[in-house]
Length: 88
Image (cartoon, rainbow, N blue to C red):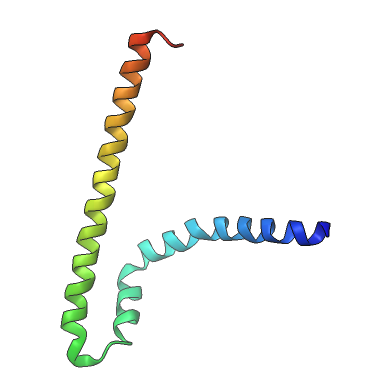
């Protein structure tokens, strides 16, 4: 029973450890990954697939930029509020 309870935890830890490694790989090898992905798309549809990938890239960049701005704004506002009410 104890070994069964530990197994999912270890699996989750391994998964969490692999996420930054995979993200780093995908960011550093972006062009190779894109070329590989496009290899699965029929030749006549590749220009449209490239347009789609570019649109997805723009949307993801905008999302991350927007979330960063929200985090910065909230951090500043909470910091000011904490100072105003006198919390240490």
